[in-house]
Length: 482
Figure: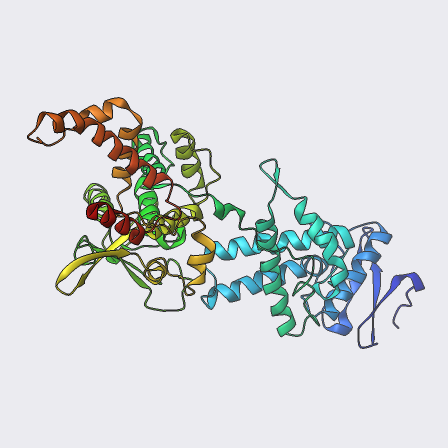
């Protein structure tokens, strides 16, 4: 004969379709409680709080746990009170595992997405006491965004872009639940509280002489690296500066992607293409071929000769042969040592390259003679892997579309050396002028040399405004006619 449970020992949960789930709370001899779920073919799980080894002896707490268990069953989650409470976390983990198996996420991206979505769930659970993702509504977005803005990392609150990253990962996960009919609609999609991307960090970049100074500082600082530091950081930094590629594109380069022959400049090529280490943002599965600059090729040749990376592995491997994840500490250390106070991120080096290229000229063969013309924006777009021309013209080149005549080769070391020479009187004295043949020319040579250095410095640091090559040509021709 079945036992009759007291009214307060029977718990109910109303489903969205109007049906009701009922179950009975049983008291064990040791004073703990269990939930009779045999009608659901799930046995009698002990009611345990999250993280507890033993069942609860508090009836009020047991009743709350039992209701959450029925809510988990209604949502199609696994059995057991601990699993019911951790059900939302389990859904996140399964979603990330599926993305990684499908090749849509790397291990690094999957770990980052898991952390972000779990943080969002923790805020929702703490603020609104939600028990499943099905209860997530648009009215909860205010508390979620407030909670994200209140998060701290290393004693500082996170920035708008980090909040946006959390919400973007959450939006993808909610879209997945919506697709499998676990949730009706996405509260995150096109919500007013989702912040827009902050691009203020893109307004600062390094001038060519500043990049040369940073590269020199990085090479000198390698002697003081500890055993955990990336020994190849100076070469990685140089690759970012000379190619404008994204950090993960560079960290995922393989040795087979590097060649010291061919290219537009005759110094070799780098092939940015998808591989087992990372994917490219560009849809073209073949990637893009980048022509090395002579100064960069010399740096990579010395690196390959010194480090001898395995032919079938990464060009810049970590000590375990894998891929470096992030090198922000190395960058911050060298920026401080170089005395650079600008707000610089790894994306700023991409900006620096595009800005430098937009000031340069390229040599073309026309009618049997070599002519120099300003670098076209389409060429820059192809080099850095942008699919839209507007990404180069509108985002990066704020004040840099002013070509400098005679600048056809990118060499940061030379830019730094010329900047130093222009600032120090001793640098001027070291520059020897050619014999002029007359006493007057010899007397005027140092003045002309100082003027040339000053002009070169201004061209590398401040692009000319309102002066074009044609205007200069007209002025020079009028002077000759007079």
